[in-house]
Length: 250
Image 1 (tube, one colour):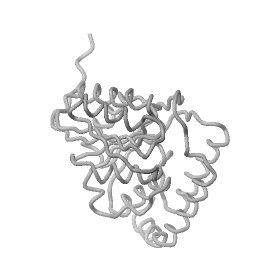
Image 2: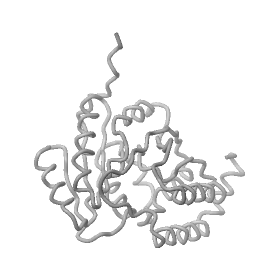
Image 3: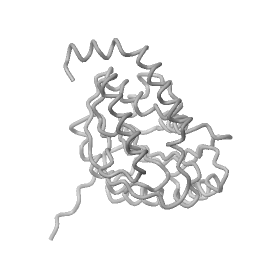
């Protein structure tokens, strides 16, 4: 007989999901989050849906979920502002001691959050990496190139910087002002956390096929803006990153 799974009644946790074209996905994601926090015995929590001006019924469905569940609330963007802006809104809205986010597209197994919470005594940040990305070959190549560029320029050694399954201390976001409002936001947070001396661990997570909704991450305009951000941030932080690497090593 298996021993009962550990519980974490002392954990204070904000969970948020950026949602765009996710009217069919967001109920599954929210219900999954509610189930896992209940199983972990967490009572001090909130679930935030950041509805990014979606043209479909994502906003209406999100409001219905908030009416149904007292721990769920919704923040609406009047118009679509993009993925990075949705993440920024979520991080700024988090009220609990820890903040976890994943996408509202139901491509991750929320039960894996348990493993992340279990690591909090040993690290500051827990970052997921997708064991097998459910992407086209071209998008996998773009992702691998992006991670390599970040490693070479910013000494960021995360295997999958853009993996949308991460757990942070909420206080981190009070120590710097997030500048990026685009896809570079995950990299920016990793850079700032490194400069501020936060420890990070990586955990492999399953990446599930997209069943509904529309993906926007691989658009040429998004890729162009991301590499423009790389140039801007390297000009601003490259020297400090090099000094840190020379002082403390990789």
